[in-house]
Length: 251
Length: 251
DNA sequence: CGTCTACTTGAATCTTCTCAAGGTTGGTGG
DNA sequence: CCACCAACCTTGAGAAGATTCAAGTAGACG
Image (tube, rainbow over the protein chains, first blue to last red):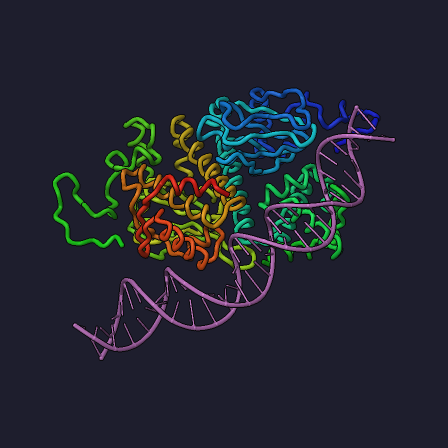
């Protein structure tokens, strides 16, 4: 889990550790997929000024909790977060996993309080973007306003994909879709699309996909046996992407 | 279904027909729950200027189709719309039902094309809001910008509630939740919260809730037998709201 | 090295789906 | 006005998939 073996510090990157938080948007290697996307450098600097970079979140630590006053949205800088809400009867529902470059917390805007909680699945760092500042800035930067509308719209689209998945698909298809989603998001960050480590537990996966742990486990075993995915604990290697893709549509 | 018997035109409302589309936002009885919410009357007039009111949609008619270029979002003025998308394997997934005062089409913003289709479940009228105009107007009207952010955020929250429902709940709980949702939205429009007519078919309900028609039908029969809801065809009367609410949480 | 948590596996059970058939409703045209 | 048609809805019986309950195993961490 993001284990940091001793690393020799290179000249280019003063801090090779992925949890460094002193950088600004202009230098951030995520800026092409994150909020600054499509902004000009002068505008990026303005955006930079409103962004607050706190210390890293420890594994299990909360970024915010359901019901907290809403003040900011957050860009994931490193690590992984899960968002989840409590149902009326006290059970947990995972609503999403958030990887570097993605924005979390947008569901809090409508009620001025967070509609879900967000916690770190591993040591993670975020950039805090005070929403009132973002609103003001958006009014004067059409590009930013548009991009933020787009980010929210994308969240809607992704939720709808999940709805479809939960509504129509078998356990196998759900797991396949999750693996492909993680794969794609890795590719966007120029990480391996075929080999990665799951930062979330089987319980979280099951909770997210509407399955029990046992079922998740059995599906992984099946995928392993049919040589579609190599599963070793949380270490995943996709052996046959086509077959995986096949699974997502096939019922 | 919204049959329009000959009606004597009253002095106050030039067109008593609920599908009239000549009115403007200032006069619209939905303005307190629709986009103009929280705007001052001067601002409402400006908003009014960008809104286009077309002729009513016939039952079954499409407002837009998945893949169409995105240009506008739409406020439902009368009737009901359903939004749905095609899955990769050609099946349909209903992603939402939209009642008067609600905004449909926001999922198209992120890709500049509509991510879903929207069609009328009964004769319906909408107000078309060209998105580029809305963007421009938002930049100069902080209230409007905020409200639109909030509307999108609400869509996210509602999708997440549906995710929870699909992920955790039994067939009974899903139907109960849908009935309560419709009830609440009726109340918001000052219609009866206990008695209403479903504008969608059993197939649509099942599709939306991830159930087969047969299961939907059986649940309605069960609700009828246990005297929680009186079901007569599409006519619904909630007899025991508490029991219904109980059902939504109970597994 | 032992303990705790996370994960896997098996067997029985249950809910929902599938398939098949029959019943209603509403509209159309004779 | 009635007969007919097409959608839509309901009901039943059997099958399939996921859940539940109950062990058991492997890893992680002190």
